[in-house]
Image: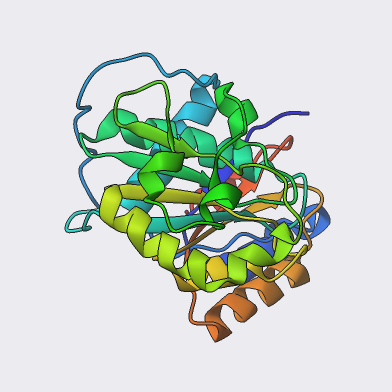
Length: 261
């Protein structure tokens, strides 16, 4: 299935756009208005490890710039990436956001696999899944002991870690609440791959300790009302929605919608 996706950039108009032009697609995406900025110059020209088509790479660059590289944005930002449901490709997007961000900044980037029910970031980067987040949650050792260096000197992975009894409840623990600030101190940028919204409240829990959340919706699958409810739940929990992505898109976006983005 195609992994084409679109970054939607207008929170105020998403309801009228999709009710008028995308009723049959049953997909809603929401995001804050995109600020104007000049794209930063790459720190170092290196090939990306993770494969993407040209259009996909362009959209990932736009998403990274909107979320992390706006003028005046401070380092030490923790951002959660979560799918509306299973199978949206949120881990795929989170991994590529992390690598693209690392290619654009000199600061350190850490991507965290907090999808304990279905970890996938280690497969995206082609590294083993061991000695990661679940291991760190059981001890008080420094978090640096549990991260793995990836394709770039400033890119790190905190994988899911070993399967342990009761791991599904670990993300709401006091230890997890302590790990997020520690990651923020140790790394300049942190991306957290969270479980899908329909599986548990873990994304909301993680979002409370982060700058906000990026929602990933699946074309032809994610329902408009479900997306709206998810946004309301996040807002009620004081979690910012930083943006949203419509993933696995196989239909062209109508010109009338493009003109409003």
